[in-house]
Amino acid sequence: MAGTNPPRVAVFTMGGTIASVSHSGPGVRPRLSADELVSAVPGLAEAADIDAVSFRQVASPELTLRDLTVLAATIERRFADGYAGAVVTQGTDTIEETAFALDLLLDADAPVVVTGAMRNPTLPGADGPANLLAAVRVAASGDCRGLGCLVVLNDEIHAARFVRKTHTTNPATFRSEPAGPIGWLAEGTPHIALRPIRRHHIPVADDVDPPPIALLTVGLGDDGRLLGEVERLGYAGVVVEAMGGGHVPAHLVPALASLARRVPVVLASRTGAGEVLRETYGFPGSETDLLEQGAIPAGALDGLKARILLMLLLARKEEPDGIRAAFPWP
Image 1 (cartoon, rainbow, N blue to C red):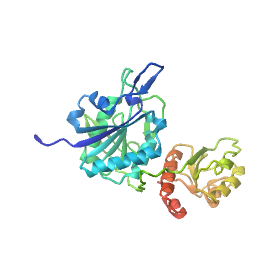
Image 2 (cartoon, rainbow, N blue to C red):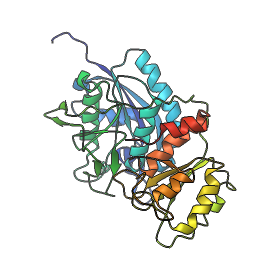
Image 3 (cartoon, rainbow, N blue to C red):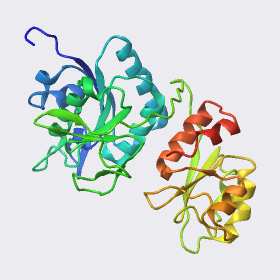
Image 4 (cartoon, rainbow, N blue to C red):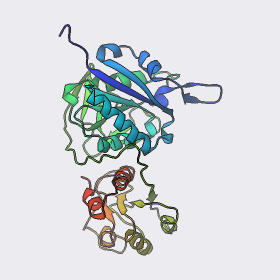
Protein backbone atom coordinates (compact mmCIF):
# COMPACT_ATOMS: atom_id res chain seq x y z
CA MET A 1 0.00 0.00 0.00
CA ALA A 2 1.32 3.44 -0.94
CA GLY A 3 2.89 5.28 1.97
CA THR A 4 3.54 2.15 4.05
CA ASN A 5 7.04 1.99 5.49
CA PRO A 6 9.01 -1.05 4.28
CA PRO A 7 9.89 -3.63 6.94
CA ARG A 8 13.20 -3.05 8.70
CA VAL A 9 15.67 -5.91 8.26
CA ALA A 10 19.16 -6.17 9.75
CA VAL A 11 21.79 -7.78 7.52
CA PHE A 12 24.80 -9.11 9.45
CA THR A 13 27.75 -10.05 7.24
CA MET A 14 30.43 -12.47 8.42
CA GLY A 15 32.61 -12.94 5.32
CA GLY A 16 32.64 -16.13 3.29
CA THR A 17 32.43 -16.72 -0.46
CA ILE A 18 29.58 -14.24 -0.83
CA ALA A 19 31.95 -11.45 0.32
CA SER A 20 35.14 -12.74 -1.33
CA VAL A 21 37.11 -10.98 -4.07
CA SER A 22 40.55 -11.28 -5.65
CA HIS A 23 43.64 -10.14 -3.77
CA SER A 24 47.39 -10.09 -4.37
CA GLY A 25 47.76 -13.82 -3.76
CA PRO A 26 46.05 -16.92 -5.20
CA GLY A 27 42.29 -17.42 -4.98
CA VAL A 28 39.82 -15.08 -3.32
CA ARG A 29 39.39 -13.85 0.25
CA PRO A 30 36.52 -12.30 2.23
CA ARG A 31 36.94 -8.54 1.74
CA LEU A 32 33.54 -6.93 1.05
CA SER A 33 31.94 -4.95 3.87
CA ALA A 34 28.25 -5.15 4.69
CA ASP A 35 27.59 -1.86 2.89
CA GLU A 36 29.49 -3.03 -0.20
CA LEU A 37 27.65 -6.34 -0.24
CA VAL A 38 24.22 -4.76 0.15
CA SER A 39 24.84 -2.00 -2.41
CA ALA A 40 25.71 -4.60 -5.07
CA VAL A 41 22.25 -6.23 -4.99
CA PRO A 42 19.64 -4.73 -7.35
CA GLY A 43 16.18 -4.48 -5.82
CA LEU A 44 17.28 -4.87 -2.21
CA ALA A 45 16.19 -1.37 -1.20
CA GLU A 46 12.69 -2.09 -2.51
CA ALA A 47 12.46 -5.32 -0.51
CA ALA A 48 13.18 -3.82 2.92
CA ASP A 49 14.71 -0.98 4.87
CA ILE A 50 18.19 -2.43 5.33
CA ASP A 51 20.46 -1.98 8.33
CA ALA A 52 23.81 -3.38 7.13
CA VAL A 53 26.24 -4.52 9.84
CA SER A 54 29.76 -5.87 9.25
CA PHE A 55 29.79 -8.36 12.13
CA ARG A 56 32.78 -10.53 11.18
CA GLN A 57 35.04 -10.80 8.12
CA VAL A 58 36.36 -14.36 8.01
CA ALA A 59 36.20 -17.62 6.11
CA SER A 60 33.47 -19.67 7.80
CA PRO A 61 35.84 -22.32 9.26
CA GLU A 62 37.13 -19.52 11.52
CA LEU A 63 33.75 -18.88 13.15
CA THR A 64 33.18 -20.09 16.71
CA LEU A 65 30.14 -20.80 18.84
CA ARG A 66 31.13 -17.81 20.96
CA ASP A 67 30.76 -15.65 17.82
CA LEU A 68 27.24 -16.99 17.47
CA THR A 69 26.20 -16.33 21.06
CA VAL A 70 27.31 -12.72 20.58
CA LEU A 71 25.46 -12.57 17.25
CA ALA A 72 22.29 -13.98 18.81
CA ALA A 73 22.36 -11.32 21.53
CA THR A 74 22.85 -8.63 18.88
CA ILE A 75 19.92 -9.94 16.84
CA GLU A 76 17.72 -9.99 19.93
CA ARG A 77 18.46 -6.30 20.53
CA ARG A 78 17.41 -5.48 16.96
CA PHE A 79 14.16 -7.37 17.44
CA ALA A 80 13.53 -5.49 20.68
CA ASP A 81 13.82 -2.30 18.61
CA GLY A 82 11.07 -3.48 16.27
CA TYR A 83 12.99 -4.99 13.36
CA ALA A 84 10.91 -7.34 11.21
CA GLY A 85 13.68 -9.85 10.61
CA ALA A 86 17.40 -10.52 10.35
CA VAL A 87 19.68 -11.95 7.68
CA VAL A 88 23.12 -13.44 8.31
CA THR A 89 25.58 -13.91 5.43
CA GLN A 90 28.59 -16.18 5.77
CA GLY A 91 30.60 -18.92 4.10
CA THR A 92 28.59 -22.02 3.25
CA ASP A 93 31.04 -24.47 4.86
CA THR A 94 29.48 -24.01 8.30
CA ILE A 95 26.05 -22.59 7.46
CA GLU A 96 24.21 -25.65 8.77
CA GLU A 97 25.94 -25.33 12.14
CA THR A 98 25.42 -21.57 12.39
CA ALA A 99 21.74 -21.86 11.52
CA PHE A 100 21.11 -24.67 14.01
CA ALA A 101 22.94 -22.82 16.78
CA LEU A 102 20.90 -19.65 16.16
CA ASP A 103 17.73 -21.76 16.07
CA LEU A 104 18.53 -22.97 19.59
CA LEU A 105 19.82 -19.67 20.96
CA LEU A 106 16.97 -17.44 19.78
CA ASP A 107 13.35 -17.54 20.86
CA ALA A 108 11.75 -15.04 18.51
CA ASP A 109 8.92 -15.20 16.00
CA ALA A 110 10.71 -12.79 13.66
CA PRO A 111 12.52 -14.62 10.84
CA VAL A 112 16.28 -15.17 11.09
CA VAL A 113 17.69 -16.23 7.74
CA VAL A 114 21.22 -17.47 7.02
CA THR A 115 22.51 -17.33 3.46
CA GLY A 116 25.72 -17.32 1.45
CA ALA A 117 27.07 -18.16 -1.99
CA MET A 118 28.66 -21.06 -3.81
CA ARG A 119 30.16 -18.91 -6.58
CA ASN A 120 32.19 -15.89 -5.56
CA PRO A 121 31.63 -12.46 -7.17
CA THR A 122 34.55 -12.91 -9.60
CA LEU A 123 32.96 -15.95 -11.29
CA PRO A 124 30.34 -16.07 -14.06
CA GLY A 125 26.92 -16.78 -12.57
CA ALA A 126 27.78 -15.62 -9.05
CA ASP A 127 24.81 -16.57 -6.89
CA GLY A 128 25.42 -14.30 -3.90
CA PRO A 129 23.24 -11.32 -4.93
CA ALA A 130 20.21 -13.51 -5.74
CA ASN A 131 20.61 -15.43 -2.48
CA LEU A 132 20.89 -12.25 -0.42
CA LEU A 133 17.82 -10.72 -2.07
CA ALA A 134 15.83 -13.92 -1.49
CA ALA A 135 16.96 -14.06 2.14
CA VAL A 136 15.89 -10.46 2.77
CA ARG A 137 12.50 -11.14 1.19
CA VAL A 138 12.01 -14.11 3.51
CA ALA A 139 13.16 -12.13 6.55
CA ALA A 140 10.72 -9.33 5.68
CA SER A 141 7.76 -11.65 5.13
CA GLY A 142 5.07 -12.00 7.76
CA ASP A 143 4.32 -15.48 6.37
CA CYS A 144 7.78 -16.63 7.48
CA ARG A 145 7.38 -15.76 11.16
CA GLY A 146 7.48 -18.48 13.79
CA LEU A 147 9.58 -20.91 11.73
CA GLY A 148 12.80 -20.73 13.71
CA CYS A 149 16.07 -20.05 11.95
CA LEU A 150 16.02 -20.64 8.19
CA VAL A 151 18.60 -21.22 5.46
CA VAL A 152 17.80 -19.67 2.08
CA LEU A 153 19.83 -20.39 -1.06
CA ASN A 154 18.92 -21.20 -4.65
CA ASP A 155 15.34 -19.93 -4.03
CA GLU A 156 14.75 -22.72 -1.50
CA ILE A 157 13.79 -22.23 2.16
CA HIS A 158 15.20 -24.81 4.57
CA ALA A 159 14.62 -25.36 8.29
CA ALA A 160 17.86 -25.10 10.27
CA ARG A 161 17.44 -28.43 12.05
CA PHE A 162 17.30 -30.46 8.83
CA VAL A 163 19.52 -28.69 6.29
CA ARG A 164 22.92 -30.04 5.19
CA LYS A 165 25.57 -29.04 2.69
CA THR A 166 25.94 -32.02 0.34
CA HIS A 167 28.30 -30.87 -2.44
CA THR A 168 31.54 -28.91 -2.47
CA THR A 169 30.74 -26.63 -5.43
CA ASN A 170 27.20 -27.14 -6.76
CA PRO A 171 24.90 -24.13 -6.12
CA ALA A 172 22.13 -26.63 -5.30
CA THR A 173 24.27 -28.09 -2.51
CA PHE A 174 21.78 -27.67 0.34
CA ARG A 175 19.39 -30.53 1.05
CA SER A 176 17.07 -31.33 3.93
CA GLU A 177 16.31 -34.82 5.21
CA PRO A 178 13.73 -36.24 5.60
CA ALA A 179 11.16 -33.72 4.38
CA GLY A 180 13.01 -31.48 1.93
CA PRO A 181 12.75 -27.68 1.85
CA ILE A 182 9.88 -26.20 3.86
CA GLY A 183 9.26 -23.58 1.18
CA TRP A 184 10.52 -21.69 -1.85
CA LEU A 185 10.47 -18.32 -3.58
CA ALA A 186 8.69 -17.71 -6.88
CA GLU A 187 8.76 -14.30 -8.58
CA GLY A 188 10.24 -12.88 -5.41
CA THR A 189 7.48 -14.11 -3.09
CA PRO A 190 8.17 -16.65 -0.31
CA HIS A 191 5.83 -19.64 -0.12
CA ILE A 192 5.78 -21.88 2.97
CA ALA A 193 4.55 -25.45 2.54
CA LEU A 194 5.63 -26.99 5.86
CA ARG A 195 5.89 -25.57 9.37
CA PRO A 196 8.40 -27.39 11.60
CA ILE A 197 7.66 -28.00 15.26
CA ARG A 198 10.06 -26.06 17.45
CA ARG A 199 11.64 -28.14 20.20
CA HIS A 200 14.24 -26.32 22.27
CA HIS A 201 15.27 -22.85 23.32
CA ILE A 202 18.71 -22.89 24.92
CA PRO A 203 19.76 -19.32 25.73
CA VAL A 204 23.45 -18.89 26.48
CA ALA A 205 24.94 -15.59 27.63
CA ASP A 206 27.27 -13.95 25.14
CA ASP A 207 30.12 -13.87 27.68
CA VAL A 208 30.18 -17.66 28.14
CA ASP A 209 32.73 -19.84 26.35
CA PRO A 210 31.03 -23.12 25.36
CA PRO A 211 33.11 -26.16 26.38
CA PRO A 212 34.95 -28.24 23.76
CA ILE A 213 33.11 -31.31 22.46
CA ALA A 214 34.86 -34.00 20.43
CA LEU A 215 33.29 -35.33 17.23
CA LEU A 216 34.54 -38.79 16.29
CA THR A 217 33.52 -40.84 13.26
CA VAL A 218 33.88 -44.62 13.54
CA GLY A 219 35.28 -46.41 10.50
CA LEU A 220 35.94 -49.95 9.35
CA GLY A 221 38.55 -51.58 11.57
CA ASP A 222 38.68 -48.58 13.90
CA ASP A 223 40.98 -49.31 16.85
CA GLY A 224 39.35 -46.67 19.05
CA ARG A 225 42.55 -45.14 20.36
CA LEU A 226 41.10 -41.62 19.99
CA LEU A 227 38.40 -42.48 22.53
CA GLY A 228 41.07 -42.96 25.17
CA GLU A 229 42.35 -39.44 24.58
CA VAL A 230 39.05 -37.55 24.88
CA GLU A 231 39.26 -36.76 28.59
CA ARG A 232 43.02 -36.25 28.64
CA LEU A 233 42.68 -33.58 25.96
CA GLY A 234 40.10 -31.72 28.03
CA TYR A 235 36.91 -32.46 26.11
CA ALA A 236 33.73 -32.08 28.16
CA GLY A 237 31.86 -34.64 26.07
CA VAL A 238 31.92 -36.53 22.79
CA VAL A 239 29.61 -37.16 19.86
CA VAL A 240 30.29 -40.50 18.19
CA GLU A 241 29.18 -40.82 14.57
CA ALA A 242 28.63 -44.56 14.49
CA MET A 243 27.96 -46.88 11.57
CA GLY A 244 24.44 -47.38 10.27
CA GLY A 245 21.78 -47.10 12.96
CA GLY A 246 24.34 -46.65 15.76
CA HIS A 247 26.91 -49.45 15.62
CA VAL A 248 30.60 -49.75 16.46
CA PRO A 249 33.13 -52.61 16.59
CA ALA A 250 32.59 -54.63 19.77
CA HIS A 251 36.08 -53.90 21.09
CA LEU A 252 35.19 -50.18 21.36
CA VAL A 253 32.34 -50.79 23.81
CA PRO A 254 34.42 -50.91 27.03
CA ALA A 255 36.08 -47.57 26.23
CA LEU A 256 32.74 -45.97 25.34
CA ALA A 257 31.09 -47.35 28.47
CA SER A 258 33.91 -46.06 30.66
CA LEU A 259 33.75 -42.64 29.03
CA ALA A 260 29.95 -42.44 29.36
CA ARG A 261 30.26 -42.82 33.13
CA ARG A 262 32.19 -39.54 33.32
CA VAL A 263 31.14 -37.29 30.42
CA PRO A 264 28.16 -37.20 28.03
CA VAL A 265 28.58 -39.58 25.08
CA VAL A 266 26.06 -38.88 22.31
CA LEU A 267 25.47 -41.55 19.67
CA ALA A 268 24.74 -40.27 16.14
CA SER A 269 24.84 -41.93 12.73
CA ARG A 270 27.48 -41.22 10.10
CA THR A 271 24.98 -41.88 7.27
CA GLY A 272 23.56 -38.34 7.06
CA ALA A 273 19.92 -39.44 7.12
CA GLY A 274 17.66 -41.53 9.32
CA GLU A 275 17.51 -41.98 13.08
CA VAL A 276 19.76 -43.72 15.54
CA LEU A 277 17.99 -46.98 16.36
CA ARG A 278 17.08 -48.02 19.90
CA GLU A 279 16.04 -51.68 19.92
CA THR A 280 16.54 -53.30 16.52
CA TYR A 281 19.95 -54.99 16.85
CA GLY A 282 21.36 -56.88 19.80
CA PHE A 283 24.92 -57.84 18.86
CA PRO A 284 27.94 -56.54 20.83
CA GLY A 285 28.56 -52.97 19.65
CA SER A 286 24.96 -52.52 18.47
CA GLU A 287 22.76 -49.59 19.41
CA THR A 288 21.08 -51.55 22.21
CA ASP A 289 24.48 -52.45 23.66
CA LEU A 290 25.72 -48.84 23.54
CA LEU A 291 22.53 -47.37 24.99
CA GLU A 292 22.67 -49.88 27.86
CA GLN A 293 26.21 -48.64 28.53
CA GLY A 294 25.00 -45.05 28.92
CA ALA A 295 25.28 -43.54 25.44
CA ILE A 296 22.67 -40.89 24.59
CA PRO A 297 20.86 -41.40 21.25
CA ALA A 298 20.88 -38.34 18.98
CA GLY A 299 17.70 -39.35 17.18
CA ALA A 300 17.73 -37.85 13.68
CA LEU A 301 20.38 -35.23 14.45
CA ASP A 302 23.63 -35.73 12.57
CA GLY A 303 26.93 -35.46 14.38
CA LEU A 304 27.52 -31.80 13.55
CA LYS A 305 24.20 -30.69 14.99
CA ALA A 306 24.35 -33.07 17.95
CA ARG A 307 27.69 -31.49 18.84
CA ILE A 308 26.20 -27.97 18.72
CA LEU A 309 23.29 -29.02 20.94
CA LEU A 310 25.58 -30.69 23.47
CA MET A 311 27.92 -27.69 23.57
CA LEU A 312 25.06 -25.31 24.34
CA LEU A 313 23.59 -27.62 26.98
CA LEU A 314 26.94 -27.88 28.74
CA ALA A 315 27.51 -24.13 28.41
CA ARG A 316 24.35 -23.75 30.49
CA LYS A 317 25.72 -26.34 32.95
CA GLU A 318 22.74 -28.58 32.31
CA GLU A 319 22.46 -31.59 34.60
CA PRO A 320 22.90 -35.10 33.12
CA ASP A 321 19.15 -35.81 33.22
CA GLY A 322 18.46 -32.56 31.37
CA ILE A 323 21.04 -33.40 28.71
CA ARG A 324 19.53 -36.83 28.18
CA ALA A 325 16.03 -35.33 27.97
CA ALA A 326 17.17 -32.98 25.18
CA PHE A 327 17.91 -36.03 23.02
CA PRO A 328 16.75 -37.85 20.93
CA TRP A 329 15.78 -35.32 18.31
CA PRO A 330 13.05 -36.25 15.82
